[in-house]
Figure: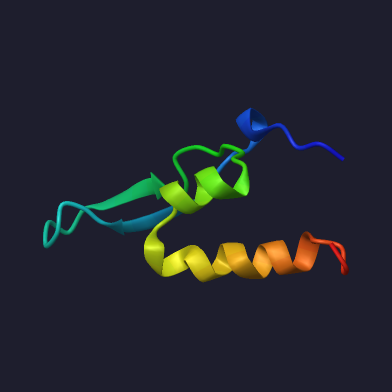
Length: 65
């Protein structure tokens, strides 16, 4: 199965913006989706989230490879 990253649409969330203004504004949770090989993803991801990539690789890599 292939997933076209350009076809992905984000959810939105609402928050007060500007702060302390009393105005509620809606924002996208994700500004865009894009596919990367794991090495490029590791360079781009927030370092605090790098463990996610390790767990993902562990789930999708066949055992014995």
